[in-house]
Image (cartoon, rainbow, N blue to C red; front, side):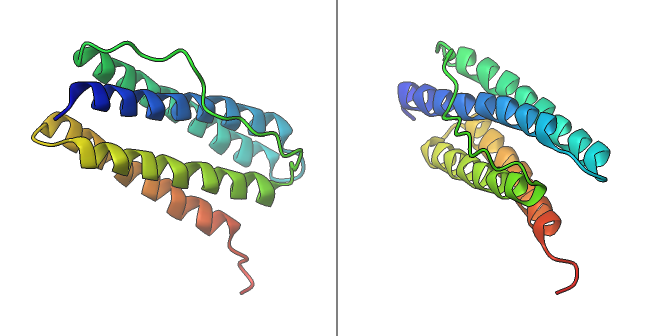
Length: 141
């Protein structure tokens, strides 16, 4: 296991999680209509969860004597604020996150700590993907 490569990958994941905090918070501001309250609640919960993930990642980085990044991943403003578009963008964000955690998993080597952390996060992100896909799905089809 290459500690520096692990730290670099963790920093990449950290930056993406922090972008998720900003992204989901912004989305919650931009939801309007009859379903605003439950959708905003769900989006704000996603932002809080991303922040929790960022906390875990930062602690893991420092456990490997690394320095957590102060950067935030890419934030693209689509100016598309209809609920389905927001959810589609969220789905894309979650899929990238899964790929980053899979990258981390491949680097784990003999570190059970890194392996179990990556597996747990992949599991959580894949659950989010399934949830968002259900939210996007047209119930009449």
